[in-house]
Image (cartoon, rainbow, N blue to C red; front, side, top):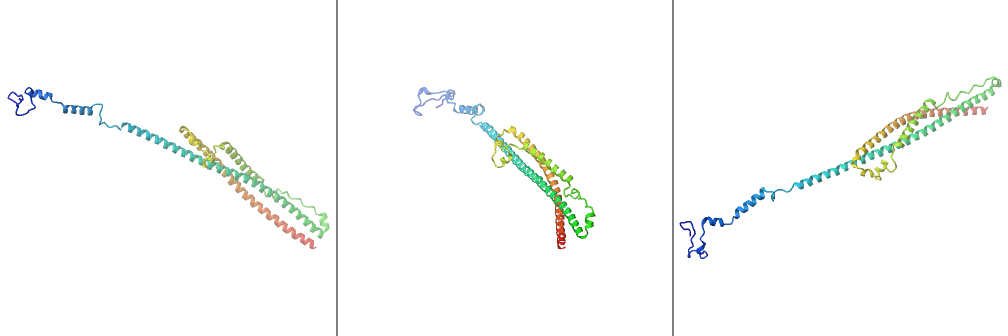
Length: 284
C-alpha cells in the first residue's frame, strides 16, 4: 500500500508474496520495468527506414529479366522474318530463271522453225521455176503439132530469174532471223553467266533441297537481298528482250507462212493446168 511518502509498504494481511524489504520507490519501479514496446517500435522503425527493409518490393530483377526475354523474342522474330524474306526472293528468282529458260528454248525452236520455213520456201521457188519451164516446153510441143516452121524459127523465151518471184524476201527474212539470233545469243550467254550453280539454284530452294541461305549471318541478309534483287532485275531485262524478239519473229514467220501458202497454191494451179494440157496433147 502506498504511503504518504510515495512508497509501497507491505502489509501482512494484504499480500503474502511481498517481503518487508520489497518496498520499492515509484521511479525505481518504472525504471526496472522491461521496455518491450519501445524495443519493438524501434525495430519496426529501423526495418521500415533502414537498409534491411523486409517490406521493400523485390521486382527489379524480374523486370530486367522480362526485358531481356522480350529482346530475345524480338531478335528471333526478326530472324524468322528475314529468313522468310530470303525464301520468298529465292522462289521469285527460281520462277524467273525457269521462265527465262522456257523463253530461250522457245526462241531456239522458232529459229529452227524459221530455217525449215526458209528451206520449204526455197523448194517451192524451185518447183514453181520448174513448172514454168515445163509449161513453156508444153507450149512448144503444142506449136510443133500446129506448125513445124514456128517451132524451128521461134526463139526460145529466156527463163525468168527465180529471185524475181521468190517467196522469201531475203532482206527482211535474214534481218529478222539475225535479230532473234542476236537476242537469243545474248540472253543465253548472260543466263549461263548469271545463273547460279546446281547446288545454289533457286529452283532447288522451291523444292526445299537447298536451305543454306537460312543459316546466313544476319549481317549478310541485306547483302543477299540486294544481290537477289539485282539478279531478278537482270533476269527481267533479259525476259523483256526475249519477249520483244519472239513477238517480232512470230510476226515475220506468219508473213512467211502466208507467202508459202500463196506459192503452194500457185504450184498446184500450174500442175493442174499442165496435166490438162498434156491430156489434150495425148488425145491428138
